[in-house]
Each structure stands twice: as structure tokens, then as C-alpha cells.
Image 1 (tube, rainbow, N blue to C red):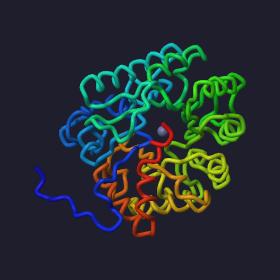
Image 2 (cartoon, rainbow, N blue to C red):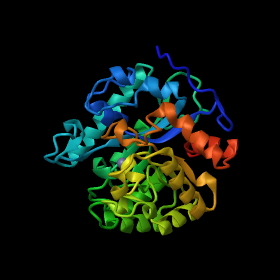
Image 3 (cartoon, protein in one colour):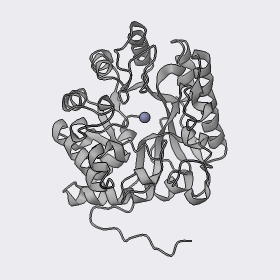
Image 4 (spheres, rainbow, N blue to C red):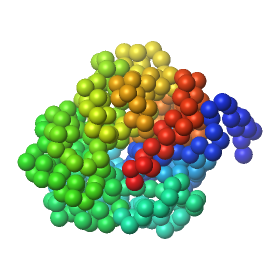
Length: 349
Ligand SMILES: [Zn+2]
């Protein structure tokens, strides 16, 4: 029991505000040894200090989320849980199936409400569980278009063709490279299934090709502004101003990423922590170029391979999202603007 009472709601901070996070890597976080059913301080695991667990999300009124199936090629990096790693296409598929099983187990325990393809029920959910929509982050786990029906039936709603390292479908933000011929056929099949296309982690070349050919909804689930990050290690991980404009003109939306290294330029981050003011700076850059506030959403990426020391110093977990809402109110965002930002993904699912 905390001796600290929650701060009273201030102007613009509706106590009933609820959140839909467009990017959480729940399986990846659990694979680092965290028991997501417990409070962060008791949850254990190697990603410390922790902020994301089901109780912490529930307490902060984060009621819905995309949650990723994330697989990557096996490397010598011992910090990456082996369960996420693959050596060949079958290994990638089975690693993703294992992560689906983790979500099904949380669903059967009442910790999440895993959305299935038929569910179009209202949000926020009436129950206690986090309404969870699966997303593939890096489509190496899709061996061929035949696998798409399996993933669709398992509840996958959104697909990023490539993670940083790239794959047979598309180039990633670190590998570079365009969408392949096979990748362009896969985009057509994803359109047939009504899948949302996520461009976060695509190379810039792959971004433009996908934007030109995909018919369905297009989003960047967890990306920030490249022009605010001079000297960034992997510049294509962040959206250029022309990419932001094109995504906005295509009716897309972007989820703001709360990872400190994606908020503050590297040279500056050696001198100070990231703050909510940096988050607001990226949000306002997005909305200025897009010409609309409903371009932005939350895609927090919280705890995805790091701890709260790499979150903004005043946004140390879901419980501090209310402070972000207050900061936006201070910048003149209306309650309606803020509610839409907090729950924007609900309009896509
Ligand atoms: Zn990511």
C-alpha cells in the first residue's frame, strides 16, 4: 500500500480517461523472466526497473493494446531471450506460435481478453482484462502466404513486414533494402484479409514502396520524428518529415514511442534524461506536419528491452500517462483531442 495518494485530477485530465497502447511487446517482456501478473516491484526478470505488468496497466486505465509477436534471427547477443530467436523459417514460425500460446494462457487466466477475428465488441472492454490485439513485428514468422490464415484466425490484426534486420519480404531500418517481389505479393494478400500495415522498422525504401501499393490502413505503430533526432544511430528507424506528411495524407496514424533514445538526440542524452516535454515536442511536430491532431496515438514500447531508466524521467510507466495528458492540456489540447490521442487505435479495430 502506497502512502502517496494519486494526485488530484487537474484541468484537462479527465479521471475517466482510458488508454489504448498501440505497441507493447508483452511476450518479449515475459520472456525476459517477468511475471506480468504481479506488481512491477515483485515481477522479477532482467528488464529493470520494471513498469509494465497487467496490474500496472489496469491501475493506469490502459484498457487495450496491440501486443507483438516478435521474432529475430539468432545472434551472439545473450540478452535476447532464446524463445524469440530463429535459425530458419520454420523456427521463426514456431517462435511466433509459442508467443500466441503465451497470450492464450493469459487470456485463460483472465489477465487479458484476446481479441479474435470475429470480435468487434465495444471499447473499452467491460471486463477487467486488457483487451489485446495481436500484431506481427517483423514478418519472418510468415513462411508463405499460406500461413496468413493461421495468423488471422489467431487474432493478428496488424503486420510489420520487417523488423530492423530485414527479411525475405522487406528491408528493415538497419538492413536497408526495398520490398521484394514476394513481399509485394504478400502485401496484396494482407489487403485481402483486411490487415493493418505497420511501417515502423521498415527501411525508407520499403516505406515508400508499401505506401504506394498497399490499399489497407497504414500506420507507424511506434515511431518518432527523425528531424528531432540529429545523430541518431539508425536514422531510418524514425520518420522523416516527408514520410510523416505522406503517411498523414494517406489517412494513416502514428504511435509515439516513449524510449528515451527515440526522444532525445544521442549527444544531448549524455547530459540529461528525456522528459514529457520531449514527448510533447515530437507529438507537436507530427501534428504540425500532418495538419491534424488525430494523426497521433500512443505506441509506448515501454520496457521493450530496457527499463524505466530509459523512459522519460517524469513518465516512468503507465501510471504517469496522466501527466502526459496534463502536459497536452497545458499546450492547448482540448479534452476531446486528448481522449482521441489516448484511444485512437480503437477507431481502427
Ligand atoms: Zn519495435
